[in-house]
Image 1 (cartoon, rainbow, N blue to C red):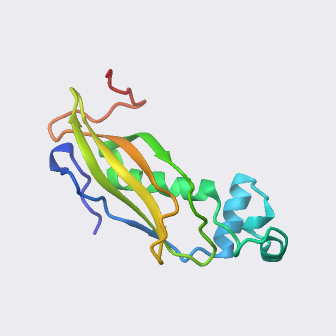
Image 2: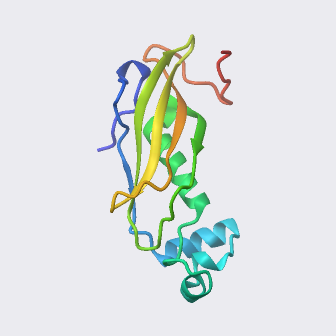
Length: 159
């Protein structure tokens, strides 16, 4: 059963959107991502090069792959009732092939605007060992129950 899309009035501080669990990420995932983005750096698909030449622990998950997981998480939660406005993150640790990652979020602030509400979130990616590799924050616009759909293209609020 698909979860109901959130409305701003239903959100609460400290609440978390459903986690996005991805993995275990395989060499096939990495090769397909390399192909789709034309990122042919060997640390993503050539294990001997990654380990022996670059002295890395294994094949690494692409930063852009992790970035799209953050957006996929937020967009999947909001659906047609919201718009991802701002996302900030940092790559602080490596994620390796074979890991299962959890993409998470937590609402830290709620703002009412004229046409929709804004939810500020702490977001991140962690592996199954609890390593937080990609901390960040996001601001999303969320539709009011009695309000119109959020316009496309999205028009940010004026201060």
